[in-house]
Amino acid sequence: MSRLELSLRARKDLQRLVDFLLPNDPEAAADTVNVIRQALTVLTHQPRIGRPAQGRLRELVIQRGNTGYVALYRVSIDLAEVEVLAIRHQRESGYHPGDL
Image (cartoon, rainbow, N blue to C red; front, side, top):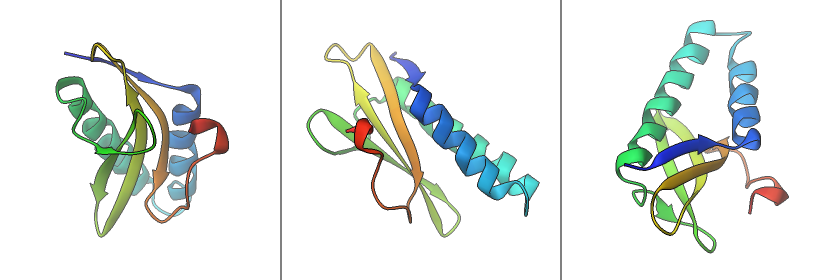
C-alpha cells in the first residue's frame, strides 16, 4: 500500500475549490471535499490508476455530477509514495507552472 501525501499546492487548490462552492452551496462544498478525498484514497491501493501525463506524472479524473475534478500526481519509483501535486476543476485550463 502506498502512502498518500498532498503537497502544499494541492491543499491550497482543495481549499480554493471549497471557497468557490461554499457561499452558494455549503452542502455541495462538503460533499465535493468528501468525493475528492475518497477518490484520492484509491491511489494508496492502485497508484498507477490515473492516466499518464507529462513525464512521470499522472492524472486522476474524479467524477462529480456532470463534471468533475482532475488531480495531478506522481508516484515514487518503488510505488511506496503518491504525492498529489495539484487539484483542479475539469473546466479549468491547465495547472500552475510550478506543478509540472
